[in-house]
Length: 338
Image (cartoon, rainbow, N blue to C red; front, side, top):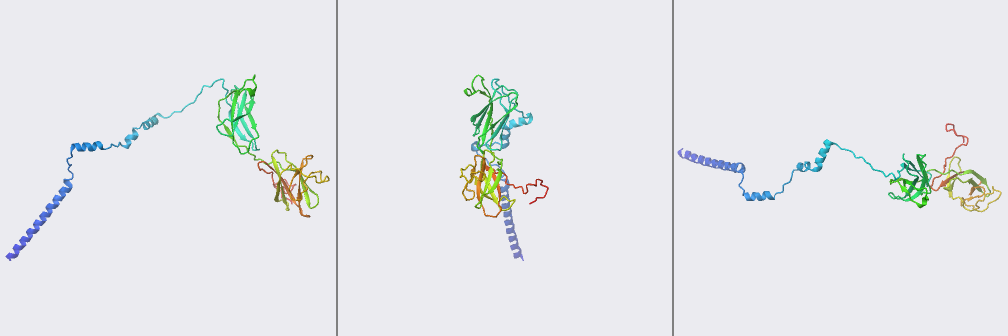
């Protein structure tokens, strides 16, 4: 029993020593990790000075913005408010005052523009000069020199012979001309305005339809269609539509160009000079004496044909093809009688 007790005491001592060593090691580790790391290390003063001197100092963003002169100016404007500018110019009494309320309008009849303007309250000039250009910012050439009537407050000019679809720029100036010198021998003293006004001429109105249309049977399965040309100067051709159904325009037979010289057909047929070709609508001719035009049409016999005659201008506008179903029904609320 005594031997066993002695062995037990030795084992106990060994275990206690191991536990004590472990506790001491753990304590040292905790001390080194947490307490010793918090203490600042001694650094050589010359080395720390060199490190700080090489480091770039970046200013704070808010310092660079709020110290900027533009920001400070805006800050002052916030309390002081804004103001307006007012223009003024001392006019030379010798320089004529410019026209006002200038406008350029398309007449929609092709090749023409209407330039209009208003005279200023004080009229110290005797002429109006109008310049036209096809390029913006360029004065262009003088197209009109007009005398001024002080009794009229508004004046206008119709500029013609223009090309449809082209942009034209106008400058309207007032000018002082010496009445003792011919206008073509002087340039006059013009106003200082340089603003331009532009417009584009085009033709939106169709021409008048041919009038006094007549259809004659001239034999040999042919019809002669005659008419009076429309009065418009820009009429470029005639179109004839043929149908076998009343009230329908039918098919376009051919576009005809007036003024083609033709052969004499017969004196018995209204004394018209008309083409003798049997092909459908090959030519068209104009009788210089009567002012009538005519065309030959080959048809099938014993069949009623209906023709619609229209005119076309240089811009491609065509007179109306709408057919009045009954010549005696002009009330749209009454039923149509066929």
